[in-house]
Image (tube, rainbow, N blue to C red):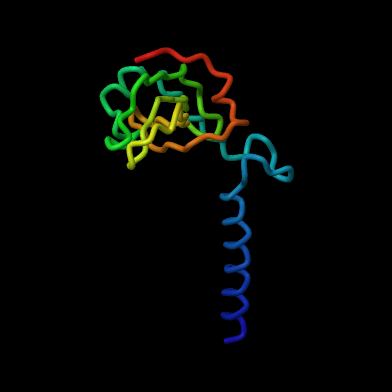
Amino acid sequence: MGRGRLHIAVTTIAALALAGCGFADSRSPVVPEFMRVKAPEPPPLEAPPDVKRLISEKLDAVFTAASHPTRVQVSAPIHDPRGRGWTACVRAELTSVMGKPLGMQTYRITITEGVIADRQHVDADDTCTSENYEPI
């Protein structure tokens, strides 16, 4: 009986030791290069979106209809350093719900897989203020 337990314990320890070899990290300093798991290739970048067409088709994704956007302008798309998508700046003359002019308002949009995924109103110190804009 004691021999059976010893045999099971030794087999279990050997199995755990060998199982650890299968999880060698690609950045592990202990495991030799030929035993490391290959790091995955980064996904390819999306093609730059046609921001003018996207905004003209989906203006309501950036501005509400009640704001009556006029003089809409867009900047060139820039690859988003945090992901695979793109960012661009959009600005337009807007009107408040009460009908008072709000002036030129600027938004940064995030475009992922050809769809406007997010928009954020920008501050005066944002890089959107120094972008070159083209009218739609």
